[in-house]
Image 1 (cartoon, one colour):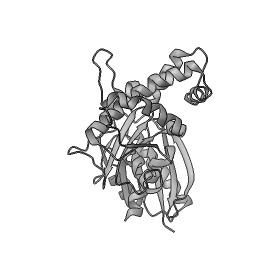
Image 2: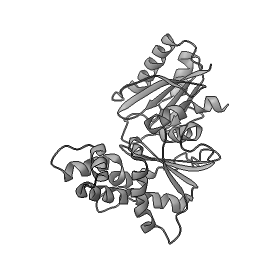
Image 3: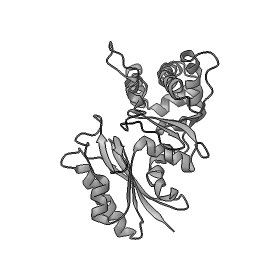
Length: 290
């Protein structure tokens, strides 16, 4: 049975697991992402791979999902925002192939999450789907028979949408889950998690319901721009907050039509099925697609 090592690199954690041809995810683990001095993150991936091969020498390849913009042919980071410093020019494919003599695929994390959902998640049998991930930041990916990257491979960088000069904030500053957490901290004296606020809102707590309506309105503003520009058949909402399911979708949809022409909304809006594991599946999907 073919097995591949999947590594998902984020600004806070690196998650990794072995995924086989039965779609089983095994040996899942995660470690804190180091400050990226002296290629620290590349070295972490080398250590993860070496350990995985010691315990499972039959691994057939390595799939990497990572923050930043990726040249997938070269397997190299070509642009990175402030989440991970000193990341541009990191040559994952070249270094890991040379060291371990295995095929390597490298993909942007939101692209990978979308591929995972297309493979075994909420977007199966879809050939036109946009994925937006709500987390520390906001990322986007678009699949229309294939991943659509743009000429300079920087398309779908939706977190930078809707910049406001007065507040010096953009879409992800106002609509990410990090933004929601900040709103919760400012609104309530007691410590509440995002999950707590959703549960209280579901039980009818007016303060939590009001806060989520404000945040959902911000999310809807960006989704409206995506619909106007791309007109996707389906929109997948990913990230850990997707666990809120239909409650989250309904909250966003209540505001979407305010930012669209009458009778314009046709896209089906769904939450991710694989939650935070989607990018792990998508990292190795190219091996199975072959």
